[in-house]
Length: 278
Image (cartoon, rainbow, N blue to C red; front, side):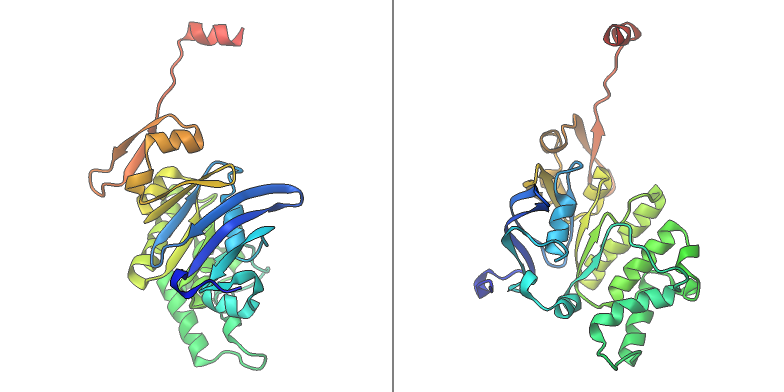
């Protein structure tokens, strides 16, 4: 099935229902990903954000609905052809033991290599450029499993960049990383969108980091998209309460203007706490 030409977007989901075994997670989701922008999926645990990303990434087949990549139904498309147009970084990827950084990044070239075609100049150039952009060149020959969490994640991003796709999906790329490392990675991904023209879709948990770096926010709850748009439009006290059941007020960074949520502090006196406990 092909999407009509006048409706084409690079990546679009239409009326998606998906889940695991008998458990339905997505309930009729419609989404299109803005080109050349960094879009972040936000929502509480179990809201369906990772399931939506997996469905868009072709790693989970929907029980109903369609995902279109360049107007073609992605679940009916050739795997290698999809990999030439879309890069995917799943949550918590693991490299084979002893694999060097350069070897890992080189794995991103597989979609472009034929059965007897290996290590062309184009491959070497793509690997070198990806490693330089992610700043991992200095430890190219080191084993991936000897690196810190942030270094490893930059290596995985370099591997995806070596695919030379202009559409990249990343599932929780900052999980379990220190705040400074998270910021460094999001700065890197932001540069990919704004300097290299790549289209990125991320799943994140940190609300304020998402609001600071996203061009578009998509808020999900109970398997549905509740609201989407620029952070200045959708990152509001009302939406945070509606989606996360979070009582917070919004302030704005005086330098960037990005919205920041400040949760309301619920204070109880010692006497009130004793009454609750009793």
